[in-house]
Amino acid sequence: MIRVVVYEDNPQFREGLTMLINGSDGFSVLASYKNCNNVAEEVEKWLPDVILMDINMPGTDGLEGLKRIREVNTEVKVLMLTVFDDNKNVFEALRNGANGYLLKKTPPAKLLEYIQDATLGGAPMTSSIATQVLKMFQIIPQTKNKDYALSERETEVLQLLVDGYSYKMIASELFIAIDTVRSHIKKIYEKLHVNSKSEAVAKAFKDKLL
Amino acid sequence: MIRVVVYEDNPQFREGLTMLINGSDGFSVLASYKNCNNVAEEVEKWLPDVILMDINMPGTDGLEGLKRIREVNTEVKVLMLTVFDDNKNVFEALRNGANGYLLKKTPPAKLLEYIQDATLGGAPMTSSIATQVLKMFQIIPQTKNKDYALSERETEVLQLLVDGYSYKMIASELFIAIDTVRSHIKKIYEKLHVNSKSEAVAKAFKDKLL
DNA sequence: GACAAAATCACATAAAGATGTTAAAATTAT
DNA sequence: ATAATTTTAACATCTTTATGTGATTTTGTC
Image (cartoon, rainbow over all chains, first blue to last red; front, side):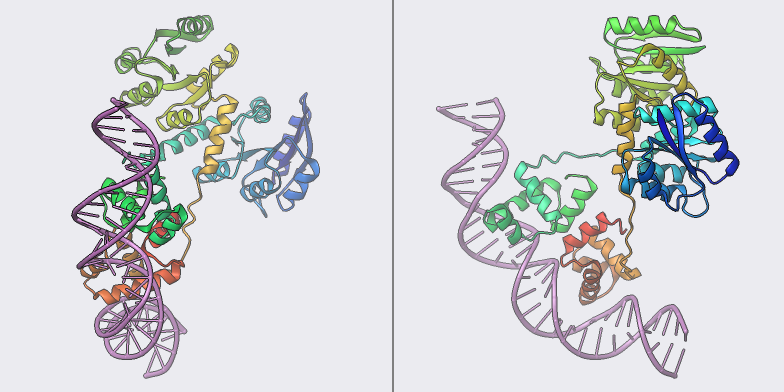
């Protein structure tokens, strides 16, 4: 039995969802609420398998509700429901640990399937949402990770430079003489084609060297 | 009729896929290949709706094949097939425009469903893959953009520091005295709570200040 | 106009960093 | 085993940076 809690402000839609789910074998609505004002306590009380969460609700909305849920429960599957596929909300929801993102126009049979899918570890999404998600990935620039062939020790020293250590601090951290630190850094500068600490640090960030 | 092209080096699996798809109503395999060596021409020749693409193949592998496909065709749906859910490959594939990612152990009925799902704009993924994808989103840090209330001039100076300028260079770049540069930088350090150039640079990157 | 914040500049000094040269151990690769 | 690379280290020197203190000039705001 898949146990569901519903958050949806529209009474008609809330009732419709409840009837659909309760009327289906293997599904049961434990409770339904019209906002997320007390979502943390409610989730801890019911311990549902799946939460259907409307995005747009008066009072505490779905995104905020999701955050509060994840503070107390990382297991429950949360499916976001929305009328529009708003790019920003999709991203924000997934970043905050939503398990799926569905448009409200999803047909009843599909909805049940999606709920089950979520309990099995899937990430059910309306296809228009899925398309958006895939596009987001393509926006993310590739980690170039240029290879400057830094040795292990050099990488270690660079890491400390990035962390704001002085030569003296690096020396004591690595139990080597300060002149050795100089040697390493000189070599690092050669390899990175820079000639100052801050340039090396900037390059480390830009090229995601660490 | 959903028109499919298959790339898979294992003859048994390739034949199995072909028979499954051809034996199903509404699906048809146009061609199947054991590597991606000529993937661009093949895709342009067949213009399939969906491509099933094995990741691990001798010669040109699936990831490289995907890239070549996207250079000539952004419409065809490409579903990656793999034995293991290797995090790195998943990310790389989605970044390069894959439409879905399936484990080879996917049951035949599900596979057909996934193929159809892809043609409808979905992003079919085996649930273990979907979980990984969702986790990736959570790794992406929110753009905090902390506000240290740097003045316009200070921001300008910080930018030059990040670009590796020395005090002297900044002075000549901004047509001010080097002591003025010192003043600004002292103020910047106060505001950022740091006390060296490289720390300021690191902080600028970390907090996406520029 | 008064006031506050920002930008400008100067002088001094101690600390940190950059650079060159040289070279011995230790480790790794061939 | 020999060569190549890496890691270690010392010494000298010059430049840059960090920090303090104080002051004048702009600029924007009430």
